[in-house]
Image (cartoon, rainbow over all chains, first blue to last red; front, top):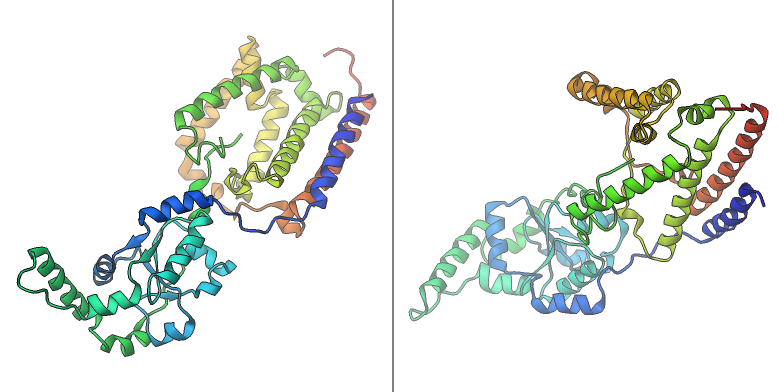
Length: 207
Length: 196
């Protein structure tokens, strides 16, 4: 048989198979359940509210707060600079560029830690990096950062340092209930981060 | 070598080692299929020998089928595969320069090295010209930079701009390639050359 015919007999059916298979549009999990469990177990995804308060006061541009509560709750109160991606809308295409990037540090927050942690688990299982969870959520934020309680005299010095920091952070970020009214209008929507996610994985090379 | 190197499965040095062995194998296959003969390569332009077209298109088709099938089976993530970014102006200018050099010198960069390796003097001269070109371009880069960077299109895929799936475009490309092979073999019969 002529080589050309042989080639045609092999590659035309393969081409038909390729053309007939519908494009794969599903988002694949990159981490197995066991890998995710192990990672979740270390608790490395949690960022303490003190660290976030510090970054907010310093106006750290790498911080991107993401409110995973409903739009109504977001309207009522949000942290400065936060954007709203409700958990139900987390995997929408327009959010991929925000969640899957390596330029910023995304921090999910909700009222407690549970919803934010769900958002983290989903994005982490998709292989996205740089996503974190604000430990304790807004409840902890209100109870301990914005209305910090003075430690009793018997506490170690670190407790007092923490208290002093929280008090000044609360002053800088607007203390107590005042922020609830200010925050709703004062939180500017952050611009989308530069999309660098694809470039980082690529090998340099060519012919 | 994606996806092994970008995912950190092999180190950069191992990557170079693999490239070294693959390069040797590539050169050996090129030489043993007669690609170190500039007459064979120039034959592409005169029609008496179209093996260059057949080999490189078969290589491209094989690679395309392999990648698409492997991505179908979930063995490879095509997002991790390096795609040359498209700079339209430099692609066209570079294509013309490369084609002119190809037909004048009778070699392309890879085959000139296989020719030089078996001691062909014209191939060595060609390699010399290659280096002059590389250094000439590098040292005068500011003159070319504007043209070099012009019309940046990102990493477009023809299938995307045609609005069809990768697989369907693959099938069309296979059919086009087979059609080209038929034309090429017809040309070989039409413009035969006895000894070259």
